[in-house]
Amino acid sequence: MALPALRCTIRGGTLVTPSGTRRADLGIGDDGRIAAIEPSLPAGREDIDATDLFLLPGGVDSHCHIEQRTSSGLTPVDDFYSASVSALAGGTTTVVPFACQHRGKRIRDVVADYRAVAAKAAVDYAFHVIVTDPSETHAIDDLQACFAHGCSSVKVYMTYDALKLNDTEMLDVLELCRRHAAMVMVHAESHDLIAWITSRLLNAGRIAAKFHAVARPAIAEREATHRAISFAEFIGTPLLVVHVSGREAADEIARARHRGVPIYGETCPQYLTLTLRCLCAPLDGSKFLCSPPLRTEADQEALWEALRRGDLQVISSDHSAYNFAGGGDASKTAGGASTPFSKVPMGLPGLECRMPLLVSGYLHGRLDSLQQVARLGCEMPARLYGLYPRKGVLEVGSDADVVLWDLEARGKITKEALHDELDYTPFEGMAVRGEVRRTILRGRTVFE
Image 1: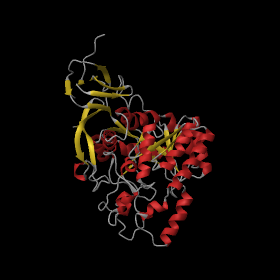
Image 2: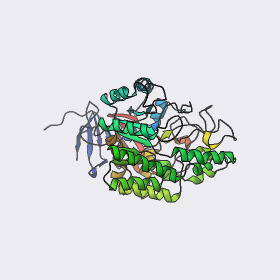
Image 3: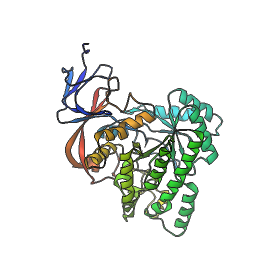
């Protein structure tokens, strides 16, 4: 059967697919989807030479906070356009940020407002809904309407005064999502334990960034992870534990999975490359404040091993972008040196660095194959949130979201080389192997 004329061909590269890597040509139709994958294709109207390059699916970053007002009233400094430009430069073509219901607000209105804000994005996107007030009069009806219109996931918090659900509310949300086959994401940290430790630290004048790790110990994450898994197991709802920071929470997820419970785990580049020693820097420790906090080198090793074994399934950025020194209130240092760690804006930027750090991790021997890279950064987030196989894979019929990687390239991450609008990166000076040469979104080159 003759192929239709191809709008674009990418020839001479090595494709990374779920079944392995192979040298093949990829053809893209006028509809922006992959029309052919063959050992040899004739040139399309646009012909891209991919000799010596590897073709991975466009990255899917399923956990990022973009133009989302936080519980403290702040909004991260980047907007949907600037954030998505940096995502494309880092090989990510789809993002799934959060439409956040603050207490007393209608979910329907929150989603509509967020959709309008997101219209300027340069990437493809979907939304999760953060549920903080399931007792709001219209909450159940609004969530059901969201599910009917394609939303496939909600996020709940077990900590932060303005966001957390109590156990009864957690069970209610889990039960509703089970009925609608929706995924539940959970920020699992033990709120009361953290509050108890934090109050004692602050009363003793222990306000520096390094005490953030003391206030949120691994046991607080382990206990909440165990409780969330227990609730999901009882209700029978799939659950994904987000931003797993170390061994203890990862072990809870592995034990549940080995029992056959549909529990999934996500970690982030910061937990794989940075440690709590970063928090001890006397002048810039607040650059590295995120929750859960950075942990130890031993936790790093445990996370890489959990990824390699398949006990954790997703790597997301948890991008939450605040300047260090500039940007008014949306700055890590806005309150001055006397600001306690508990009042510093939490979160790290990472949209652009996520896939490069993941590819570099493979090239440094931390993962077994490029298929693992594609599965963790592209395929599994697409599968878990209802985007697969349109996103997350290089197959005939999928969107032609393709990233051309030069695995021989060597470099360092620097603020100057990144494409966001922030005044720092937590990964400054980190050596990386591999580099994005071209990013294609639905058949069109969007970064080169």
